[in-house]
Length: 267
Image (tube, rainbow, N blue to C red; front, top):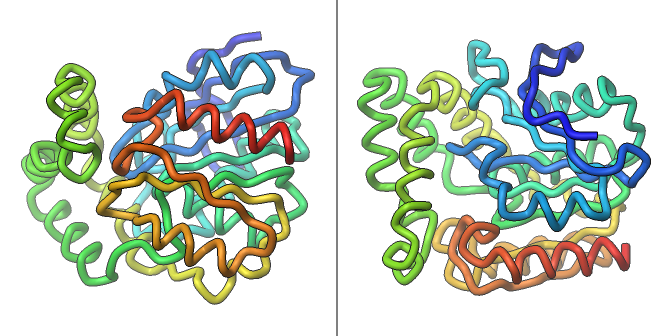
């Protein structure tokens, strides 16, 4: 069965969701990074949907999902995931999220362990950036709107990708920039509020699900050291380093997919 993509009515609003793969297969839900939509996972769909019932969605504030007044908190973003699973009658799933999506996964691992079979946290951290930097970005977005979104898009490649990839894949880089520029500034700002407020460093030791921490070898945003710090706190967790910067699933899709599928097969 393929639903690609459509509006899914949940108790927390109407979310833009895609479902691919065998409906009887184990469920795997993917959560996008800040400033992207579920399309960021396009390179992984074919490989993941072979073995899993694959669910992708636009995070609140992004794409075709609800843009409700901010500020958001990660309890909101985590409860959105649970509402999507409930609407699809999925009791337990593996969860894979990147950057903001990975932090949502950490929240779920702490607060909804009964819903997770496995957790993959990619290019993320238990505390991402500084509260001041996120608050300043949110304020600029609320003041300048679409013009500030365009400015963020113009500066995004160096945060997202290594220089060699930027030179080799200009069409993909431009597509990602254009997608960022089109997002709702208030939805993006409300997610910045969530990132400013959230610090899970003292909580992630409670995560019981089998956990993989994927890091980009030259990620300047969430570093290999961030992944290693989480590994030191999460019992039994593993780290996989892939040759990429921040959006590692796009820059090193084969290595990323191999790391995730190998982990899930063992988990």
